Image 1: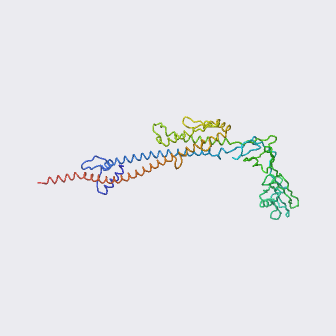
Image 2: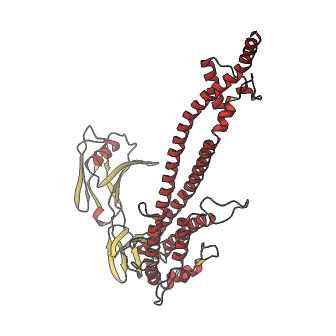
Image 3: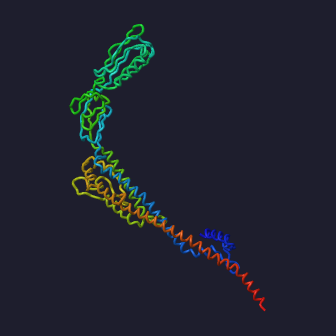
Length: 468
């Protein structure tokens, strides 16, 4: 403030012809010396400047409060997401997992529509993919005799027919001619020590893709080039709970409701036991995610009510809304339902409350609860209106709803106060700037008068001395 006033003084002195050496040096005042205009202005405005500084300090404190509250609100939003996952009837509690006693021969995936239970499955043989190959010729570009015709059928349906002429009389050209006609088979040329052979492979497994090739090719010297079946297209053969099943593919759906079987080998004389059950691993992960998110939120809140090592208070220590949030969360995690033989609170699931309000999970106890009373765990967490997740969702909504949540309104209050202070400070600074100009002008005139007094005194003395 002194420097800005000094600048104004200097400017005014330059414009008015005033001399004010004391304005910058701060020397003592007196007759002939003038006054330190900048210091006098600063003293006159000290009260207003203290008020502005006080408001700026308040605004900085509010900014600190708002910046501290914002991540806490984000933590509660993250907690809400984990609670929603536990409360979703189509979420992790609806997921099923299929476990095979012999995953080398059979694996499976289960949709949420799968019914828990055990199934006995025997795989006699896998579905095969039909293929044919030709006799060998020298190379893939060896010219063949023209005029031959052969056809390819897949599942008793003709899918391609090739007549050899001067445009397609090599194995490479014949393979291209086949592929241009159909997607039911894939033709290629195989080269080995014996020469080049045309290979034809069905794109569908099982009986629907079983191939038949009729006709033959000839070399230029009339030597026949015959076709041979490498693999017949056969359906997979298996039994599921004693029911014989034939499948064109090794991926078998719709035999067990909601379960897809993946066949990889014969089971021999030992059937596979396939168990369909709730995916407790995913549920445990969801519960641990909830606990982690809760601990993050409650720890961030608890910190605000602790005294720092230096003895200073935290930014939100006196925030009543945050204190309400702390109490609401601590109350929500001790929520209990009426006993019905199943879990009635978090402790029943192996989730314990620590002394600082955080949670810890006993993995063994949680696994036992899920395996021994799955429906009870689901009921405790998901029962509409009265379940744990529903209750906590309501608590979090009251705290963090983007429109009506208590902490949301709290943050809006801080923001509004900061805006009001900004406007007030701006108004005061504008008024002070005008006052500064007026004071400089007044004190500059006083300075000039004081500097001129010795000369006036001298002149007055000379005039008095000249009087007879």
